[in-house]
Length: 120
Image (cartoon, rainbow, N blue to C red; front, side):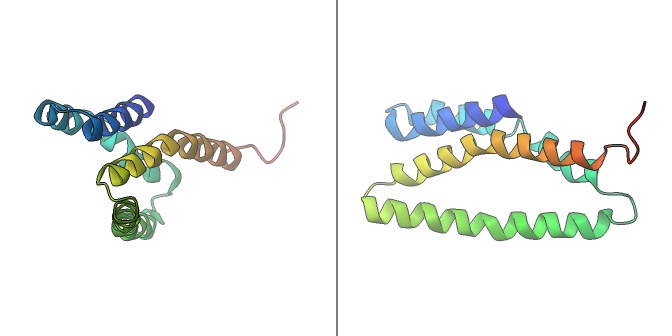
């Protein structure tokens, strides 16, 4: 996942600065799909079967509510700066925050699975 996010971010920055748009767009399309399956498996790792349906509902609600918010922020940045590259750079910055969020996720999951009584 981390390699996919970093590659996606680098290609997104390259997209706004390269004259070779088509090859970069093809590379972005190829690389951005790499972490998708692993990302979609994360909620199932922490949700028990009896709460999985509601948990996945919350996950997808946040995901689909966040998509237009991120686009709106990128659009505002592009408008205020006067260049579409600002939106792409914002997207790249958000992608580079994803590894830190994944690290936090793993810390939270590790804390949930600690034994109640420490072993001797």
